[in-house]
Structure formats: structure tokens, C-alpha cells
Image (cartoon, rainbow, N blue to C red; front, side, top):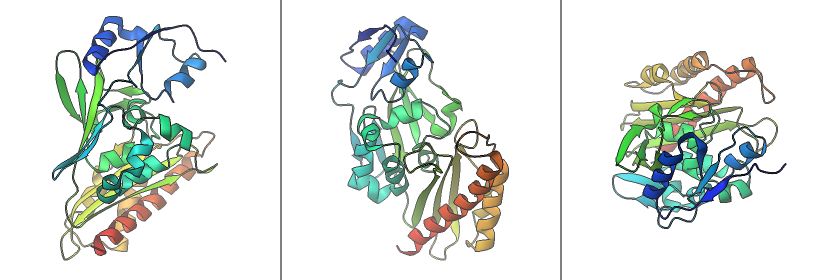
Length: 291
């Protein structure tokens, strides 16, 4: 199926790209890796008059890790994220999620920020970024604003981005000592299939294994990837036990809002939220106890 006709615009930097977006409003789309937008265009889901290509803008494919935070630039590919040794060391869930997103070809083309801007409820990198408490730096031609990623997703395919805005980078605080994280993904048809359920967990504990901070996020089982705050609160201030893990997993299952589609039924998805939450929490605690 051929692509619809469009004009291709090449900005020299992100500010210029923002100007182009603002000028053409709803008639323009950003193209970075193109793994999502080109498919949608082929199927006439979207038919923009202008495509703004940012893949060749220099110096926006950076991954920076310092003593405080990780910064991910607009054009960072999923493969680069998965293979970066600092990401693997400090953000293992994010590295793993990037490594199991779709196929090798798509990971080599697709960008991390494109993955979240597509706003699919099943986006693999979304739940790790949620439990790592990432911020989204959004810019336009006049300046920028910072938004917690928990406020970025507004619905399937819908984000907080306004006219003329582009995601400049992601900022993720460095995990504390004695912390662990894990991402669990269920893909019933194949390892490269879109997730039917995704669960991420992050735990921080003191020397007595009392949980000082807990974060749990679920994906593909609600209109947006989301944190399960009630489950998190049920763990904090307590020594983690199997009974507590089971309770938190039950809360996560109860707050899931899955649908039935070609990948899984509603009932199966809800049950697997409970199973994967237990696994993610156990794996996170295992990491802490080996430190």
C-alpha cells in the first residue's frame, strides 16, 4: 500500500521543527524513526500534509548519566538504550524493556521518545519510565516545560503535547542505593509481539529490608500505562513478605482495566497482572538483597 502524498520538511534543529509544527498545526507530523507513523499513514489512519523529519538533526541522540540523573535525547534509538552499559547498570528494567520491544529492525530505527509519544497503552518503555519517576522535557519555539511522565499519557494515542510542541528529552533520577527494579512482559503469540500485559516494579529498602519506597506500573491493561498507588502504599514501611507481595499484586489486578482483543481476554489479562506483579516485586527484592 502506497503512502499518501505529503511534503517533506527538514529542520536544522528542534526549535525550527517546533516552528514548522506550529505553522502547519494539525496538518503536520514529526518523523524520527518512522516505525509507527509510516504504518499509520499506509493504512490511512493519519494523512498529514507535511512530514517534519528530525532524524538528521545533529547532537540530539545523547545518553548522559551523571551522579544525579539520566538524560535521554530525542533521537536515541531503542537499540542504543538497550546496549548502553550505564543504562544496564543503573536502569536494568529500562534496558530490558528496550531490548524486547518489537524486532531488531524496529529497535534499530525506532526511538525511545517516539515509543512514548506514540502513546500506546502497551509501550514497553512506558512502565519502566513510570517506576523510575521520569520527567518529560517538552519544548516549543518559545521555551520549554517539564512534566512528570505520569501526566504525559492522556489516552490511547493521546499525549499532553500541545500544538507546536516536541519532546526534547527525558530526565530520570538515578536510583538510590539498595534499590531494585524489574520489567515483566507477556507476549502470548511471539517474543516480538506487542505486550498483552506489561508490569514494572521498583523497590528501595533499608538495611533491615524494610521497604522505604515502592513503585508499580502496569501497561496494556488500561487506556494508559499507569502507576498503582494503592499497591505501592501497601508495601511502604514494611518488611516485604510473600503475603504483602500477594496483597499488592491483588490490588494491581483489581485496578487493571483490560479489554479483550486478539492478544488476550479481559479475564486472562487481569489474572496475569497479578502474576507478573508478584514476579516483578520478587525480582526487584532479589536485586536489593544481592547488594
